[in-house]
Length: 216
Image (tube, rainbow, N blue to C red; front, top):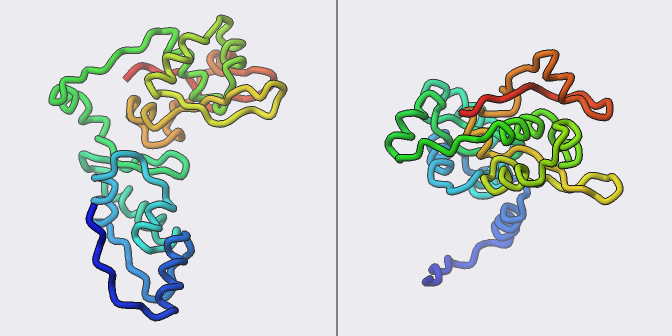
């Protein structure tokens, strides 16, 4: 790639401000604003979820500005064909759930349906995350190694560190792909549990966070 033309030597204060911005520091007076048009375009062309800090560094604004614009964008897209999906510190644009069948026909991807065992395992992970495979197996009552590996391969669940227990087992949680597959914009939209399902998901006295899923 050709090297960019170097600009004239900037004043020391300007150089220091540029270094601070690259380091993720809050921009000083006169910093650029981040418009909804810019934010939407950035998320549209991104090939992966973007972190809030990453957006702030790219736009040269502080995290408070990014959060404000993300909130505005979420509201602006509520009745549109794309929605803002938020998972932890990361955000991305996804198609609206109600547009799924039409979009699927266009791309020729009806999607691979999940087996009952995969759905059950995915439900346990979704409502008990972060959770170890051992806890999943105790709740289900059967060996879940194969189905867990299958869900990891499909990127519906992901590793989220290790538990602070003997052996440091891997913790599992749902992914962005899980939210997209089931038409959710956040885990707060998971349907509530009925009493029977809640009782099944309780393990070692810990309370779960929600209920069972139907395949999308």
